[in-house]
Length: 343
Image 1 (tube, rainbow, N blue to C red):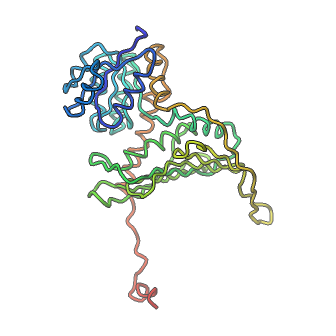
Image 2 (cartoon, rainbow, N blue to C red):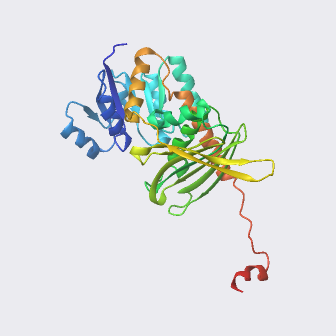
Image 3 (cartoon, rainbow, N blue to C red):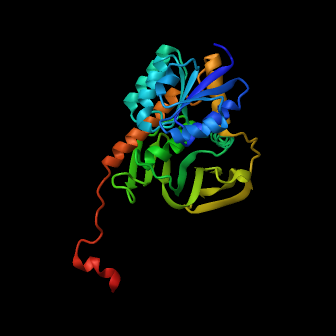
C-alpha cells in the first residue's frame, strides 16, 4: 500500500466537506473525488476546488483507484454503500451511526475482517482531547466509585425526517459512555415524544443501567432554546463536568461530594475546582489521522467497526424500548381528585 493515500467522498452535505477538509490537511492524503446527487452542491467544488473530480454517480467513486471511501449520507444508505465499497476493495469511514440495524453492522464488520480492510465509524468525540482527559480521570480511579453520569445534547434543530433524535444525537453520548467505561449497559429505558413531526420523536430521555450499580441518563433534543453539549460524571470522591461548548474550560473537576456516616446523617464535602490543561487538537483531524494510519499500518482504528457495532446495539435496544414504553397512568381517578387543585 502506498503512503500517499487517495480518498473519495460520497455525500457532500454537512459532514462530507468537514471530513474532506481534514483529510486534505494530512501530509500523506488527498481527496480526489466527490459524489453527490445534488449538482448544486458539486458546483461549489468545481468553482473552489477544481482539482477534485465530481460526479453524481456513486459507482464512479467505487470503481475508481481511491484507497478509501468516506460515506457521509443518510443512515438508511450506510449499509449498502459501505458493503459495496468493501467488496470493491476500499477502506471505509462511515458517518455515525454505522448502520440502521445490528444485523447490518454485524455483516459489515465480518466483511471488513474477511477482506482485511479498515472499517471505521465517525465517532468523533472519542478523539476529543477533552473526552480523553475525562477518560483518564475515570479510569485512573481519581473520581472513586462512579455513581452516575448525566449527558445532555440539546439544541433547536436540525430536524431530520429520516431518523429520530435518538439515532441522530444519542450515538455521540452512547459512544462516549462506552469509551469512558469500556462496558455496555444491562438495561435501557426510554421516554420520548414527537412534537413537530408525527412519529419522529424530537425529544428523548434514555436511562441506562450498567454493572456495578452505575447509571447513566442521556437527554437529547432538537427542540431546545439553548445549545448544550455536557457530560457530568458523579463519583464518590470527585465529580467532573465536560462542557463541549466552553473551549477554555472544557473539563472541570469538583472536589466535592456527599458521605453517609454511622449517624446516619449525610455530610457534604466542598473542595477546590480544578481545570486541567488540555492540549487541543480538532477531534475530526485526529479521527482522519487514525483512518489514514489504519490503512497504512493495518492496525485497528480507535473507532473501528466493532465499536460502531456496539453503539448500534445500544441504539437498537433503545428503539425497542421506545416502542414498548409503558403507558402513562393518570393521576386523577375520580371527579373529586381532578378538581382538588381548584379548591
